[in-house]
Image (tube, rainbow, N blue to C red; front, side):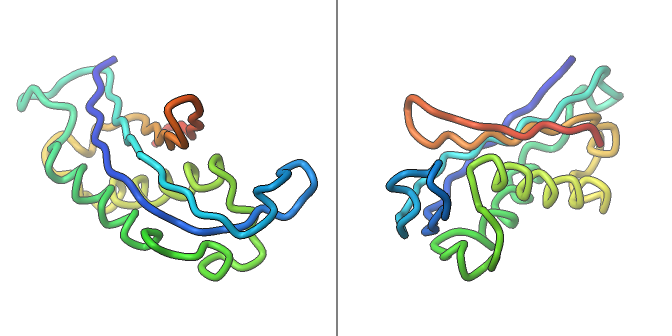
Length: 130
């Protein structure tokens, strides 16, 4: 399996109601380093998984909707855990893939993994087939 990974980051604010979240129940900020990894089994004539520049642009476009945002206001009623955000970003990238935004080879991407690095010791991801 071949893969290409691009990276960006966001700063958000949110709260996570529920006893399981301890102090994170209160409004707090988080900075995530986000990796988007694109997979395909075989390379085409271009010998690339997809256009790295277009993948970077798609990730930036998705994250722009969240960056410096209060997720409690952007997604009222949602429990915006790290895992939930990973799936939300995945959905944005999957839509870009289906729209043909990744250029040559992008239509052959089989799977995407979105990893949110919450700190140097903790991360979560969502991975799905296209």
